[in-house]
Amino acid sequence: MEHLPEIGLAFAAFTLGMFSPGPNILSIMGTSMAISRRAGVAQALGTATGSFVWATITATGLAALVSVYAFVLTFIKILGGLYLLWLAFKAFRSAASATCKTEPSPAWEGRLPKFFARGLAIQMTNPKAALTWIAIMSLGLAHNAPTSTALVIVVGTSILSVIGHALYAMAFSTRRVVAAYGRARQYIDTALGVFFGIAGLKLLTSRTAQ
Image 1 (tube, rainbow, N blue to C red):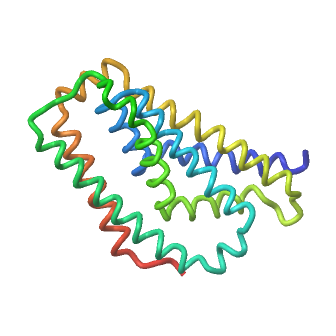
Image 2 (cartoon, rainbow, N blue to C red):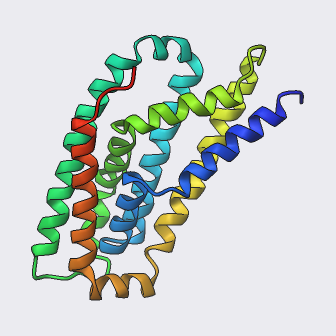
């Protein structure tokens, strides 16, 4: 009970982070609008799984992670930057396409694991996720905090991640939003391509924090 304020602070920091859309959220939105709700939810679950992995790594080895942080972050940044550039290429290619999908295609239903893997890959190659989790665990774990406190934070934030990311997927797969996407598909895909491209280049060219 004495660590509830720190746990609440960690939950609040994590929740606020989900209200600041980054590559993971924008990719979920794009998948939900362009493919289907199920594909968006599958990607949301992949993103949530990535959050769980980062939370577990940070909770179980914060000191070790910090000690090798520069090397880990450099590797993650390279992978993340290249993957974001690949997403930018796909978004630009979609924008240049003359076809416009406004209804879910049954052909995608068998490829849901692909969207789960996409969500997981974006989250695990996002260096900001490592920074975020170090901050969250620093807020939530006092020096005398027992192991159970870290467990509560990991489980609680994982639940919040599933709910939050799934809500994004469902909100951006409604008929009204999908119809709006159909009318402005090329502009939306171009905007996503620009965002992913800038984010990828920024990762590849930025200096690693020491």
